[in-house]
Length: 335
Image (cartoon, rainbow, N blue to C red; front, side, top):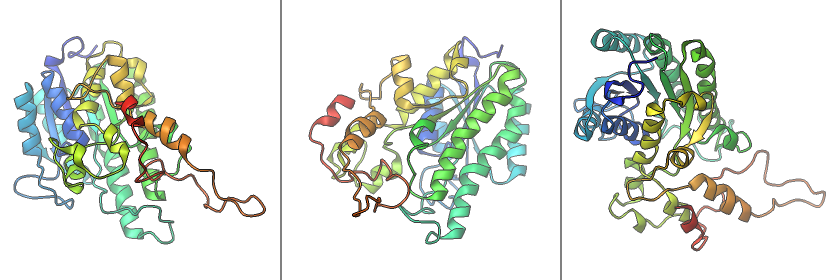
């Protein structure tokens, strides 16, 4: 049994991709419960990553500490196995073990194109996206899981976009994005099998419509006035990074967390299971909103005189269906 089981105050966690968004939200939520969190990423106050965003790992670590934990910023490019190996060695020296590993490395913004077939999509950007979204998670696991299995009870969380059940029947924008998000789901299943002999748990977790720093900026709003954004009504069922963070922290503290192993779940699944809410007291359920409202209202595909689907192979993504639609007040039942 891991030393942190039953008391998160002794938890040693590492969030790969903690600079912003979901990774930051999870790191801070673990800190709020008293954990020591290594906040790993590429963007520091001295040097930005190719994402060229202002958020830094130092800021995340400070937020972890302010929340009640101990935040430790560590610059690491998880595409470089040597850097991941050095990070694992440091955690081993300083802590002797690792209780929670969160793989949230992404960095693919700006590399993928909506609804673009493979023969039109930039090949170099697509392959770079796969390297950033898939290889980094494998490299992280290769070097950090040996620390995690030192004691039974370890937890691995793979962060993705869309659960396995949602994604398996929906084509996600293009082949590169689709493969990236399904691969991360499958990795969680793989780790659940490899950790089973050591009493470890692994699951995939997806946030909903995330009010990340970049998303708020893109819509020209802040967290204080986010409702003023002139966008799709699904935005009204959006959530802060703290929402999924609270869910992951709840799993980490759950003595029965093995029940989640091998599963692919959403932030709303965890919120319902643990009685959690977002920072404003709401419980957003955007995935349910998409499937129960948006998709139920989608028009039947256009067909030619022979009944052949004229919309092309693959299902239109849930994010694109009804984009810009106004579903009235239907969203209120999902918040």
